[in-house]
Every structure is written in structure tokens, then in C-alpha cells.
Amino acid sequence: MSIKDFLKKSFSKDPEFQAAAKERKIQRILDEREKGSNERELERFREEQRQVLIKKRLDTIRKMKTRQAFKSGIMDTTNIFKNHKSILTEDHKILNEGNMFFK
Image 1 (cartoon, rainbow, N blue to C red):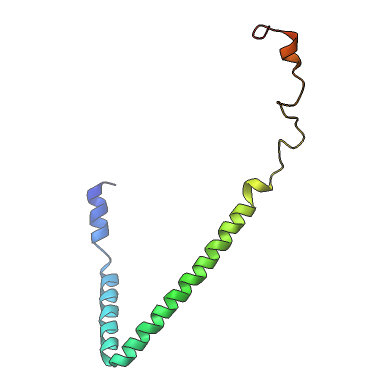
Image 2: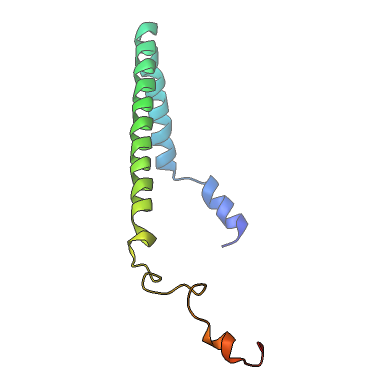
């Protein structure tokens, strides 16, 4: 699919869809004109409150998910270094015996 085909497809929408969208837009404008200014302001205020509430809920959900991500995942696996001795504290037999690198 070339760029020309993509642009042609994106700009040519279904005529039924375009008609329905136009009708819906006209209906919304007519509904808004029927309302009084106080009613429109009240609806705007309620919508703002609804958006603030949605944002708070999303923030709490995101925090929960990040907490779960930190608690799970890599940290749930067993520690592969748990029963191993430290290289710094164990006896270095290789260094004492002498070899090609250390004499």
C-alpha cells in the first residue's frame, strides 16, 4: 500500500458515516441552543467535576499497578547468590600455588 492509497483511504470516509456524524453534530447544536445559559453552565461544571473524578481514579489505579510491578516480577524469583561464598573472603589456592600469571 503506497502513501497515495493510504491518504486516499483516510480522506474518503463512508458517506453514511459522514451523514450520521453531520446529523449528530447538528442535533447537539440544536440541543445546546434550547438550553438556558445557567443550564449550560451547570452541565459544564458537572462535566469538569466528572473529569476530575476520572483523573483521580486513574491516578490511584496507576499507583496500584506500579506498586504491583515493584512487588512482583524479578523480585519473586529465588536469589541465585544466596548460598555462594564471597570471592574476597575465601581462600585463594590458585594464587598460592603459582601459575603462569602469578608466581
